[in-house]
Length: 406
Image (tube, rainbow, N blue to C red; front, side, top):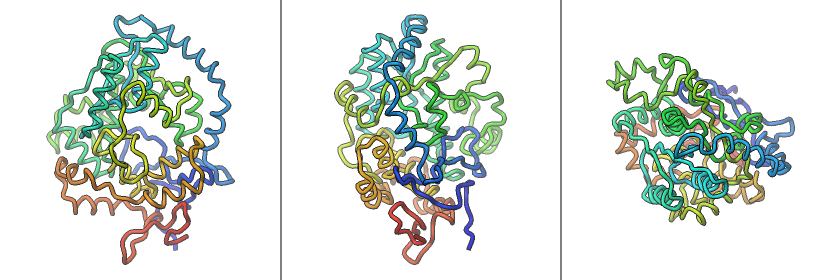
């Protein structure tokens, strides 16, 4: 029987023989073009069942980091001291990558970064402490976005009901806010930490030091979507104000060109692994992991500042059939920190775990009834990934080959 496939995903489900990542993993999308009918581009596998992300992880070991540092020094010298008090921008909210990026730029290379923050939707208490520790440990100045809370709630709720994408509002701000501050302060050089492409985006993106402007700029806002809804509908049907929606909308393409805004990945120039970034942030930035294991996985230090973050990974499991543990295992396999056997066991134990710790609070914040949330989730389960059984929904296939159809 031919099963229906949602989102343009590959009909045949495969798992990378080296990283255990599913071939259903979508590449990064342009969020302001995102609609339920969007067809996903997905991670590429070769004929031997091995993913692009694995192949890149092997190439990464051969990179001449001294040559890459020379490129970085030339870039920094072009901008050092050119724009007044600050000469570059580091976006973040106090996670390990923003701590490492800002400290390296300031204390190793003599730059004077200003940090900018699009704050989490619902800060965790330890996440907020890490944010404060980040700034105080590096004596860093910061600009934090002050968006309209009602607009944030409405868009986040709509992104769940329309796209099952609770993190869209955060991702939008994360990529766009730094560009807007860059334009406003006339500081064109922006640094992020690790390139998302390492996790499975188009492998060609790893050859570039900077992020494509298509993720934070556009020509015509009238054609854009937020939470899968047009701007006109958000104004007319949901009574949102354009001045508040502007916080979530990208810059115009010509403004990016005129201001010469560049968003670089420091991880292109410096060897960067999540575990080492964590150790660095603990030592230099007084970063602290969660005081407990993150639900859905085995780690404590990655993506821990927002209470909605855990739900973001779980809704990804619903749509694409792999969970947070798979993401962590895949990364650690690429960095040779786990064996395949260990990875399979961790995925088996944690991948399907529901993140209940903050669930009630998130639903109350968004004014979504819990039973309605699960009804919404079930609408987004692709039949080729999930099977409804007498004991509930089950994956047809998983990396341990004990799904209902394996």
